[in-house]
Length: 360
Ligand SMILES: Cc1cc2nc3c(=O)[nH]c(=O)nc-3n(C[C@H](O)[C@H](O)[C@H](O)COP(=O)(O)O)c2cc1C
Image (cartoon, rainbow, N blue to C red; front, side, top):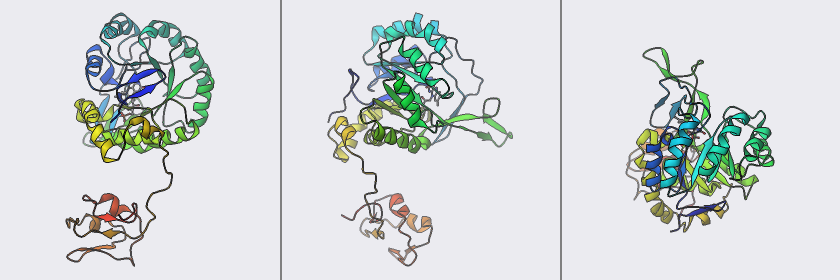
């Protein structure tokens, strides 16, 4: 089972990386990732001044994280005088340095950060204005590949990418957090966290389909573009989904904020078995496979395998047309069934086939 990835001349033992954020904002946190099993390390976005972040700034539930963070609270000096020189002595894997946000910031920061970066990553969360001059301002200051990070609220994302590549970017990271959104504290009749307008940014498993769509579409338009996926990863299967959609590397943050940082090594450990389950020999093979843009199943009526069925009644409860009935065994009423596929997707024991899959 080959997990390794080579991208722009750098070797990654596997495709999983942390995403920029609080988990990669200090020397001790970066050391954790350097010692872990993941393929590479990424820093929090470094600007000239440390960010002044109003607290509270991060809350989560099982599926989502809401945050109002800005960039690293540590100023550039602390990164270049202390954190990065120390890390460089210990570094075991490629390092992506995230830098922000303006051309004048880059003029000062990039020459100082350059020796530590294998790649640069630049967040464009705050808009597309002056994108070309922003991208060329950083590309003119370094020979290292520059990845531009796409925010999901940029609707003309292919136009955005075209402009970034023309200005010198070598790759794309997609996506940043979704939103803005709002999370409420009902008891206190307030927002739980928020900036001056009460808004926060949304990330975690709930945003995975949006990230997956961006990666799939970008890959369709740019077959050879170095592409790093980010958004909603929480399992080895999610990593494989993103690679199939076209990602070279895959970043994760929020699921580790929800469940703990041991999730990174767990995902790397789980990858070989998950690949085996789906007949995948290598990450590279999956990355180069073509993705069918048509569902595999043909939307026939569901067929229930009564041997496998555990009579949990989930399909009976959820069928929107009330077509599934428990008559001692589960029976589908074809006069009601609209062949939507919901029952098959929600069966906990894989006892329903025929709508979204073929019957084997
Ligand atoms: C608390 C928090 C802080 C973040 N800080 C940064 C940052 O400094 N720079 C950046 O480019 N993205 C930042 N992000 C966005 C993440 O890197 C990532 O793009 C987004 O959360 C989606 O991935 P996920 O669902 O795996 O978290 C932050 C996200 C969160 C939740």
